[in-house]
Length: 212
Image 1: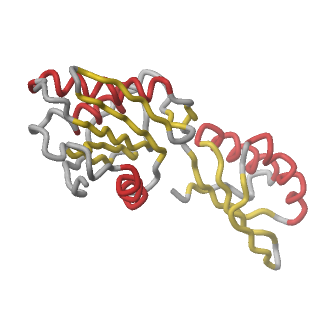
Image 2: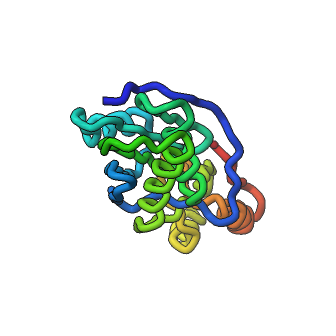
């Protein structure tokens, strides 16, 4: 099984369309010059979850289990014995090229007796990963914001009635003598709308503050 090692850092990810992740585990297999390549992609939210996925799907009997994941600004990849830069990084580039985030791809290779060379390996690993992600059902990734605010009891009912249209969810509420402290989560694109709503409902007496 591949060791949990690789490269880490913060690289710029060119975004020409909204980022997405895979809706569920998906796979794609292809044969390239007698070697079998199997890509399995999984949505992940933490390094621990990514490594648990690797332990689950890596085949100890295979020649190589190469992988990469990206979660926001963090990433890891591993060549698992293939020449440096020919497996893990091309898989990572496939994730980025498909405009995906919060995803891990493991590409397992069973060697068929014909060497592919560095360029051939990079194309095989990267291409298998990219096709797996291209065929996958996608879920858009929505940037979220957390806001805190205090409102008087008189406007609480109206505010709560408007939260659904702003796609806001209440994470916490605490009742006090003069009103309610609320902690809300909602799409980042609606944060300004909520701030304006709170200001209007309270006639400027309360303001929503970003907590993230």
